[in-house]
Image (tube, rainbow, N blue to C red; front, side, top):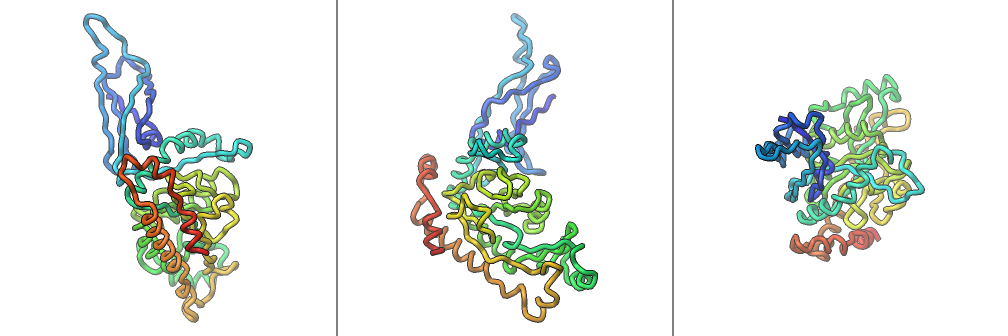
Length: 340
């Protein structure tokens, strides 16, 4: 048996297009198997096997092809829509510094974006894109903290095995302090929104912070970083599959990086637990510092209100009408009404 895996991104379309499957030793191949598994360590959603023995005909022998074309029609239920990170670059004069390695993803973003949006609306969910640093957490490098302050902090950190403990961690060479109400916020807004992380940190940093915030890997549809952006020093929605300017709200402490999507942005007050040279020594004990920050609670109320008004203003139609529905809705006027 020969096993051929079709590109995961191509399989995440509503209809998987014709795919060329090459074989080095075509005459020895008896069967072909295509498996689609969107998540690691999960059973496949598609397990397709076909027998190639029909190419042998006693009366008129036919050689097996060196390549063959296979078309699979796949209509995933809403719950089965997997996360996907894609890149699209609309400005041909301003090339992405990642464009060469992401050309294939640029094409597929156009193919599957509407499929994801229809699935999200089918669950009555909007998209929420969240920044990390100074929005959900604050971190500093351990080497930038004095030995005395390290001793103080080391007595108060939680283990990565205790992700429901207190909100101060030591991990990947950094001290990390979660903003008050972060875990509760993610759990609450996850009921109404599909969650995405987008940080100006590195890809490895984003992945580790995602593991800290979402140890079971169930909250976030996608986690992306500056390494995935199409433009340096700027963030936009083109690298996320599903979110676009009409169905997405962004929460970030920095406005200037979202110049193309300002009407989608809720700017949150910058969260600083550590000073430039280390931590705010004992302020969390003496003055309750860190527990008085209620920004995420306030934003949770805004998000809930926008979500409620959106689906009252735009009732979700039957599945056959979703193609027109996703073209006619827009969350931005409603969001601006709440903010102004």
